[in-house]
Image 1 (tube, rainbow, N blue to C red):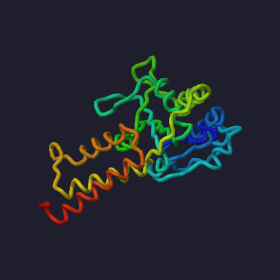
Image 2 (cartoon, rainbow, N blue to C red):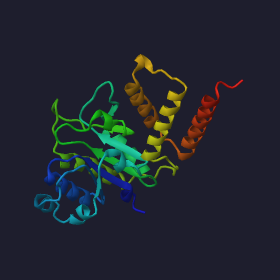
Image 3 (cartoon, rainbow, N blue to C red):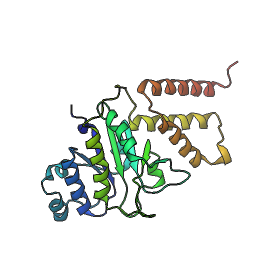
Length: 243
């Protein structure tokens, strides 16, 4: 199987149809055929078709999703792109090394690469669904890349790396949907036993828990073990403290 067939590019609420068409053209030239749009509005316009010259079939079969989790549901590795850094954003500013690792994973695992809105990128709630964040360094303090240019930077580097990178070992990694289910189960169980987060801030703790789960490559068997532990805790909580 061509490892590029395991790669899906996800555009979140793209506002300019031309950027969608130009991105499709980029994907065609870098060997990627999977494009997903999250809440794109009226996107299939003559401008989009014109800028997708030679890659209209990517537009014809692109996925349309109402939200980011549904677009990522089948992905085992999720990479977000951002130009912002901050305390709550653990961003890798060495994209080549990060993309080289992804190229090795693409042989056996489904990868989603997420690009945010042209105006303000990915929101904090959307960053929680990304297992890692990549930033492309720029010569200016406040970079402003066109959406399709950002897609080209990433996909070209991935296309180049896949020519020489050896496959990483195959692992049965949990999908994004399965990680979200694990996060939900853990949150419910902690609530059942009266867990109180730091500063009594459940929303912040939810972000911390997401970040913890996303830092490691969780295999399906690992997720199953944690679910069983949670189920046992729920059982004890329903019965009262065991003697």
